[in-house]
Length: 416
Image 1 (cartoon, rainbow, N blue to C red):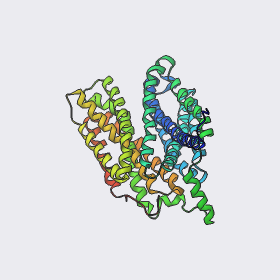
Image 2 (image 1 turned 60 degrees about the vertical axis):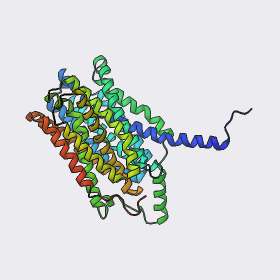
Image 3 (image 1 turned 180 degrees about the vertical axis):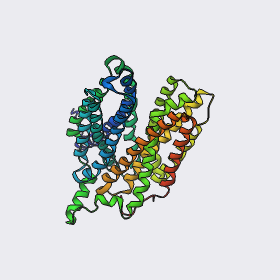
């Protein structure tokens, strides 16, 4: 008896496998972003305590800031490129640049080299997220864009948790350099799979075909993102992205310190970072479904509103440790997925011809918030008022994001 599957079944299985590769590869690209989110934070104490390469507090701050600046520039630059040359090559090049520069960071022999490679790695990494977001918003079945993007973004927090866990082993046994070499190596290992298995976005190819058939160039240009009917939309989404990443980076950087100032131990503060990111993954698994069933705008407004509530609750001293952990978990559920829902909203409101540019602009402006968040937290810690004023500031950021998004329309005519 033949054991071969019928031709239709074989074709269906092959099609499903082909459809899963883009999901996996975009997830891995985003996981690299999450790994990088934590990697510098976990090696800073070692760099400073051992005076490695001659680092001081101000110089490590400069290196950290320039890495984030590189991400912002990379995100803005990649948008028009991915709309012009496609999602596939843009993502592969972004991952390659980031990975090679990550390894080079681990091999740096001076503060200047370290800082330069962090900036260059940021350029590559900044291009990964908006390109992967554009691909997944177009790869998803109709009406499932929110779920596709939020599931992909679980990779961000898995990467962050992986970086934190690896640091417990690698930094002590193999030194700070190993964290960067391993991160870069993981990215390099994904490149052959991306080259072999990552197709071009079908929606992008259809947009190119429509453009060629029209005989008048692209149907929409990158400049349309910041003019005409999209200007108000772009401003609202960029402000929300700024506030969202201010919260993500501000909390990941300063939560342990703020909780220490509130009277908790350093170990408890570190554990709360893990709880925060676990909550982020849980929130992402739920948020996409809500966005797909209730609408992107309703979901993102609710998420920022609930984020504000739980951040405000953290400003209240709680005697029960379980209650503290539960509140941090709920804050993680809503804070992190609120930012991802902004990206899903962008993908919903712009046509494929300018979707990459719109996502790049939103992500790039958001990276400015990623710089402001840690800086704001650091200023409050230095002033000795991080608790409770840090949580007051984060609550205000969530409220401002919600108020701004309320001005953005739920749909744009002609966009599918």
